[in-house]
Length: 136
Length: 161
Image (cartoon, rainbow over all chains, first blue to last red):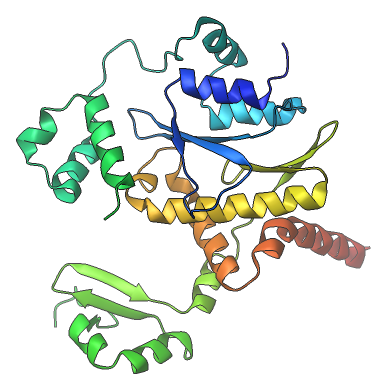
């Protein structure tokens, strides 16, 4: 399998629905930062250098696709790039909204229980992400 | 008194507010943990930086070096982040920046990170890195723990012989 470039990594993040994130400390760096939160609360983070270089070490690449991108195999990365479709991460069985997220929407965001329960898991995550990234 | 009464009675927030300078000195200069309660429910403990450092003394980082054709990378398994540069020194610098970025982000978004299944176990290392950074010792804490431990083991082995 070929070694990916940082451009490949950036394109993967766009296809797989990751959010591009500014540096938390407001610094401009040599990287683009990406983040994705899964339905169970898992937070995935990665960065892609502005250079178009290859990620030239197989062991580092292994850590990136497994630990940062949260993939089960390297194939999933290339399949997403080749098909332009996001990685199917969810179980076949539809999952509910995590209970902690409902609690946060009610007690931190200030929604009523009925409003929080009316959201789909994806909407609940989007609402929570909007809350935690908005200036307070 | 009830058997449920704690050994050290927490100070109320009002008491702390009235003599904050004394309470702070007690914690930081006299190394005494100060339990503080607000109402009957919210309980916290004021600790000096030195005491927190002692609590996380056994927490260590184990960066791994990967050589690329024209770059060097350092992977930090405890946070699942890496630094990269043209040489080892630049990669170390980049990793330190990544650690600071991660610590800041983790604490800034603690509500999400402390509950994330793949992040909640990072908390002890976050505190270790935070305390090290506040003390100006982030670099030796990230890069030297293993070297020091290794050196101690070598010395211990030599002593046995």
